[in-house]
Length: 55
Image (tube, rainbow, N blue to C red):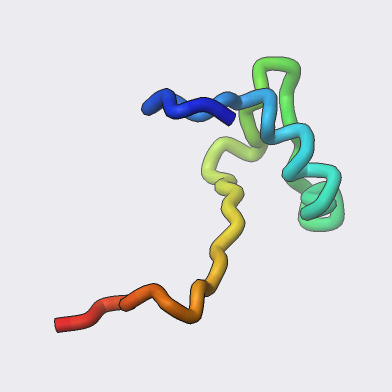
């Protein structure tokens, strides 16, 4: 993964292997787009030293 602003969509193949979206009816197209169109993917991680929503 680089420092580019745009994500490397090819990395979605790795995510799909881990998340198994077909169980929910979500598939990855040859252009690395999720279908159905309203689908999204993400890994959300916690870091113990991070300050979340700190005011």
